[in-house]
Image 1 (spheres, rainbow, N blue to C red):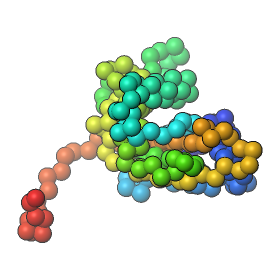
Image 2 (image 1 turned 180 degrees about the vertical axis):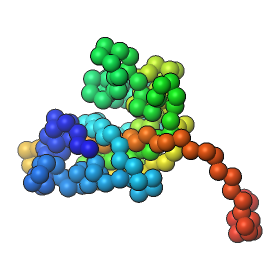
Image 3 (image 1 turned 135 degrees about the vertical axis):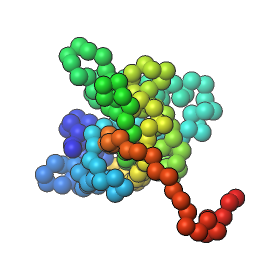
Image 4 (image 1 turned 120 degrees about the vertical axis):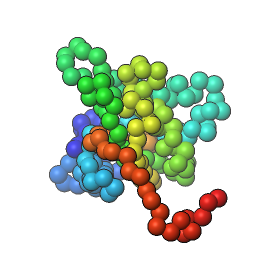
Amino acid sequence: MRPPKQNAGTAAAAITAVGTPSTGNPPEIDRFQEQPCSICGKRGKSFWFRLRPESAQSLAKKEKATEKFRDKIRSHALDKYMRNDEKGGPTKPWNVVDDEHYDVCIRLWFGLAAPDADKDVDNMTKALLDAIKDEKEEKYGLISDDAFVQHVQVEKHRLHVPPGGLLPESNFLIGVVIAVLPKVQPVTYQLADPENFPML
């Protein structure tokens, strides 16, 4: 599933001069959007943001930084990506169907240029998941709660900005793929040989 040209295609083309003939996107972006999750096999809805990825730790050190980061994503999401079942009706997270919450598969694509290319993926992932979830039932999140995330796949790519490319503060691209999973029954695991799994 490809994002609108003004989100992924145009932004990514400005970052790298190499793109596939069919879409103009770099091949890494087309592969990320088109391939299914290697864990559940699901394909999902893709979302793209031009925003500097932040870590949960760095946001926590600055006053109201977490709220500002979240609001930037939400203001974009409300305009571009929020699900709306009826024209003029309320927006809904993608994993809420008939007021029932479903688990989700999340895949993240972080594209960073120097000097931010060495940021840790675990800290960026936590900050982004916190930013795309609902806050106090406001119905503004792409997902209702990160407690419904069943699994996460994360990719980090180092971007090369050609001469005359984007401004340094704009050399970022974040991709999110959300797939809603069917309801599953809890499974009870019985270990055949518990001694192989030492208790710590």
